[in-house]
Image (cartoon, rainbow, N blue to C red):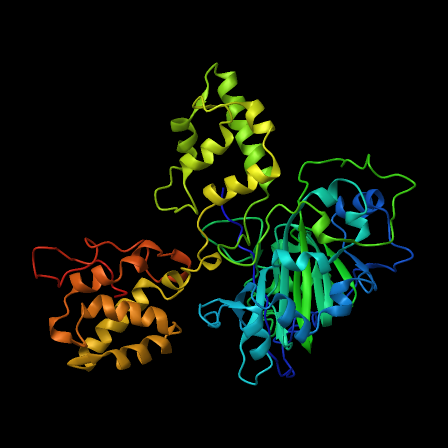
Length: 522
């Protein structure tokens, strides 16, 4: 089970210049041909019932637009900067930089890649601001959010909301071309969004980026602001949709549907509901839908059993797997396999499914197993897995989910990577004979880190001294000072091929011959 890394969207302005070559060459995506795929639109009066919405849109993976769907909700009518600051200011959110894959996440009031809403509201309109909230929606905000009746009025879809996210910036952003893992209802509270939609069947034309761990999500290597049709010739055959979403509207985006988004307005805020994929399902349960059901009024989100709930502080849950498909279904398969072999599923066999030694878990395997082992007999049965409640599954996820650095307060130890810090220390050793705390802090912060982590590392290196005499600073001293950078090392943020080791760095505890190491990068 691997955490689904949810792609972050962001913005830059592009000057459109004439191009030579194929139609649309070196111009923004969409200039290769006019949009031709129609997206059906609904009003509050014509909104489809959940069963019809599933059969006509969710099941066949067809996008749909709901005009004015949330104009009667508290979020649409109350969510001003001042209201959010006063009512939800202490809640924390995840931050991205505005230019995806080009910048480190900004530093919030205290942490890299994380801020509280009070501090965000006070700063996101500043001219030099690079902050963009791409985060789990804090649980205290659920009461203000309305759920589209085509999903939440009744039926199984409303019971399969996996995650709820908030997207908020000062506008002017533009995303990469990408796809998300789950079915999505994206409702715009403020601003305007311009969506370019591409059906999944065109994935082969989009030159999907090759990733070490393939999941349901993903992104294209095509630059949407300047499409090179010589390098990526198949793009010219893509048919697409052009959709403008205004404040109060909701867009249904099917699972794995590629899209590119531009955000306009000085306050652009959206809430996105991620709903199960329903892979392999021919039908869903709508038995609670009756003629007495209110099919027009959005219910508030707090009335629903969302799988992955972010309470507003602590470890976030963004990008985790569907608890039903990723945990209950998988564990049922394990117990059924044991039954077929006339054996019982004990802890040792269960733990073998997590045998990748270099994948750190959020919690503890034994604790996760004990949550499921209801009678404490040391074995896991099919009936025990079937009896797991939503709260059980949430607790299991807290233990067994692979550690995702960006969801943690310890994110900085990963994104300001071991190799980045190691090279910085070695550079300063060459530049100065005496390294002061002030010189070190300025250098570390220029790399994108925080003052707190800069001071922590200096204290580890200085060992109680005010300054560091750099000729006395040995690689073993650097290694010992950087233990957390080793522990939280993550391949996606590092230039190293594997987690650093003393052996690979040529560090020998009882020998001062440190000149041989395996990492040319360092």
